[in-house]
Structures are given as structure tokens and as C-alpha cells.
Amino acid sequence: MRAIRRHDLFVVAPEAWHRLLAGRPDLDGVPHVATWARDGRPVIVRRRFPGEGDHLPAGLPLPPADGKRRIGLAVPWTDATPSPPVTLAAARPSAPPAWHPTVDAVLALAAEYGVVPQVFGGLLWQRLTGLAYLSTTSDLDLLWPVPVTRRLLDGLAAIDANAPMRLDGEVVLPDGAGVNWRELRDAPPGGSVLAKGLDRVALVPAGLDR
Image (cartoon, rainbow, N blue to C red; front, top):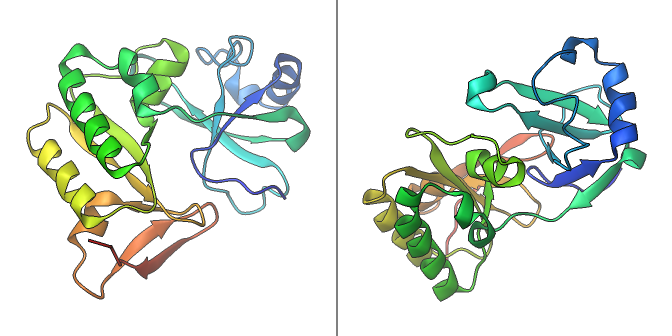
């Protein structure tokens, strides 16, 4: 079984996608699904369900206008090719103009601490598909690689306090599990936070460097 993490992206060849959908009659007529791979759109790694075996646990979300349905798929490894993550800087052109000052502030904060945030959620899919995933109530979902310091999270909280959208997302631990950045920042000394991994959810120590 290959080493993968939640939010990793993979592309599926169109002919393999056709074979995959042949076994999913429940997806007949669902908007965008039939042409997803043909249009070069990736799938994203999700949490693994029991009994899925040695397949890539993948999914794709539909835009809000098409029901915002989350579609789960089990893709044979031979049909899946890794696709690079999308950084916040690369996704900026697809963000609403009202978000740009906040995005720029986050990018400046990240550069100060030498980290590169990636996107998931609505901004990721709007960037990758060109479809409308964001609305006036959407969050900006970010993945922050470790090491992340308390000063960085304090800076992120200050940006969030004046942003037109909510800054959501996770700090990604070395094993690939994700911890909500607010919960990590607000955890008391010696406390624990919930980490979401590919196969399980567990409490982990909430230590942070200054």
C-alpha cells in the first residue's frame, strides 16, 4: 500500500475513469462526473473507509450549484498518478478580489516564517476546475506544514480577525495527520489536540515552539 496523505491529489486517465464509472451506476447523469478525468481534473485523497482494501481512497466535491455532493471513489493504484499540490500563491488568481488583501497578508506571514501554505476546499476546486465553488460564506481552507510556531499562528489569528472570510485549515504533522490550527493555538500547556489521519482520529500532544 502506498504512502499517501489526506488532501493529496491524483489524476486518473480518461479510459481508466470510464472503467471506474462503469461500476458506479449511481453516478449516471451526475453533473461533471462523466467528463471529470477527460477535463484533466484530479481527485483528492479522503479518509479510508473500512473494507476498501488496497485502493486509493479518493473523492471529488460537486460545486454548490450542483448540490455540493461529496463523491467517494476507490481507485485502483494502477490507474492513479500523483498530481502536485496547489499553493496559496498559485491559487490567488482564482480567489474573489475581496479576498486578495487577506491572501497577500497570509502569504507575507508565511514568507516571514519560511513556510508554504497549500489550499484545499473551495478555493482549490475553483482553481483546478474553473467552476464556481466559492460564495460569500465560503472559508479559505489552508494546509500548513510543520514546523509551525506559536508566533505564526498568532499572526494568522490577527489576520483572521479582520478578514472578509474565515481562515480555516490544518497544520500537517510529519505523519500526514492534520490538526486544526485554532485548536492547536488555543490548547493549554501540556494539552492535547485532535489529529485527523488517513485511517484514524487520535489525540496528540499540542506542543508548539515560540
